[in-house]
Length: 169
Image (cartoon, one colour):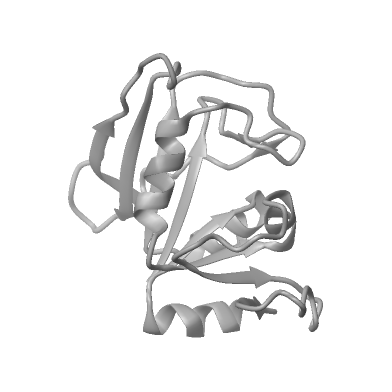
């Protein structure tokens, strides 16, 4: 199973200068909760924006054309093409965590999307396309907590490929 996991603002922004455009600890906690114990897949640029560090409790895969990319990092797995990703997702749930090019390439293959929708707009230079509601069905929404540390209204959404019947959120 292939699941895309990301947060976006109201304009589809997901990044600015290789960083998240917002500070939302509740979303980081949610991201950890849904990805912990799973394989995570990201592009090289996303991995580098995270300081080339592995996230604890997850098996990390990086999509790269370089055969020996960061071979000195023990525990980092490399995949080099979509066929390898498809094979990986046959045996386990793979959480795709970025970036925009990887999301665009893998959305047609994805089974689920777990998205944090932030109800604000931020300066951004990296975007994702909105989900086509003819193809995707929202099956659950949870409102995020707004408080002193989480100043932006947000919601957590679970989307699955749309069957021929069913409603969207």
